[in-house]
Image (tube, rainbow, N blue to C red; front, side, top):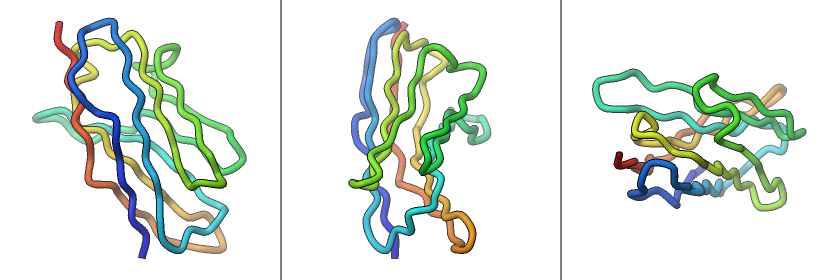
Length: 118
């Protein structure tokens, strides 16, 4: 079984920074995609940023230039550096792991709250 444990959420003022971490444990196949999603109250869960095992990343338009996703493959850990935070970034942030072919499976973390005060 695979477990994802997030950390680093909290309360920050607008314009501030936070760094989220997500550590995966269990039987992790090296070909995988790790990502961060978020869900604000009353809204659907949305992709924030994703990164494949080779390092290529993508971002939601709303966070480009402010957030940076990175990973440490040796530690099966993904990070999300969030700068210039805005009140609209307030949400529960979820870590996500998906195995790529020839393996299959996807997993979610329990979520960590990020609150940005204006």
